[in-house]
Length: 211
Image 1 (cartoon, helix red, strand yellow):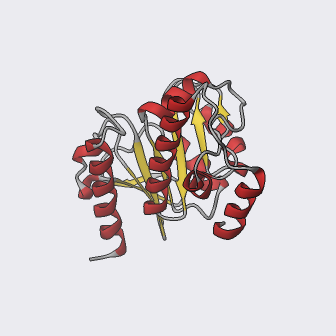
Image 2 (cartoon, one colour):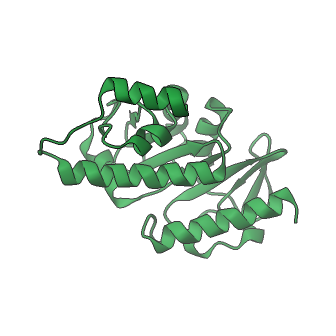
Image 3 (cartoon, one colour):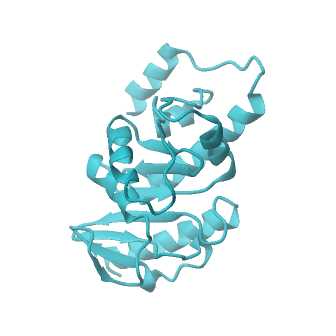
């Protein structure tokens, strides 16, 4: 099996797992991954729970559609992060409930709406989680805003929309998106209570040790 075929199978498997656990509903959410000669991205109006690996969209290095079904209308969202973060091998965009709730509560421009409560949130997301102002879904005007926000952040929250998360590999991006959702759930559960956050020194130690 070729590397592209394996990646197609992995996207479908991750999509199914995310859908079955409620991280996306209906046709919400999309996943992209970098290839040597371009990119794969889930098709427009597709359900992450029922992806056909052979029909996942393929884009060339210039993000032109070259194979598979018509790509997600939010290609620009993935392009913004993949172009800005060349180390990123994949991007996951979800409408996961708790992260989206934070995206509805936080002010656009806020840099870190989820506190550093757990080490794995820091390890997978980092210090920053910028909140990008609201744009309607499919609005390409979102691209420069995501590009600016992701220069110093592995993940962003789209106001009133949901998270966009990058990772060095597809696995890394999915695990980071899952960790972000869990951190958002914890933040909402603990809101208004005297929760103990990780100290700046502890955060720095995690980032120094794990990158």
